[in-house]
Amino acid sequence: MIIFEIKDKLREKIDKKDIKELEDKVFPLMGDFVSRTKLFDEKIDETKRQMLRFDEVIMDKASK
Image (spheres, rainbow, N blue to C red):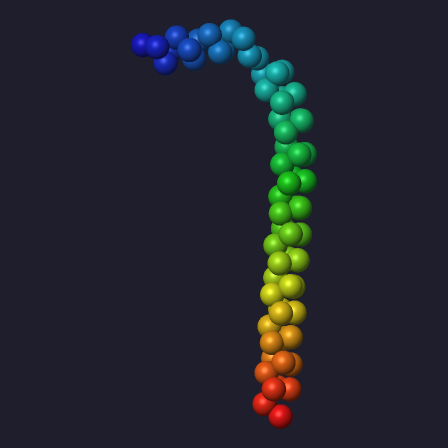
């Protein structure tokens, strides 16, 4: 089967050391990406809260 041939060729080319080096490079970047995404989500949530509060103030002033 072609899949098994590809799998065997990949095993010949890649060893555990290469995988470990790749993990050492990628995992910190992914951690940074996740933390930046969470920070961005928090900023969006804060902006939504501010907009809702602004709407409340405007509606209160308009009703007077």
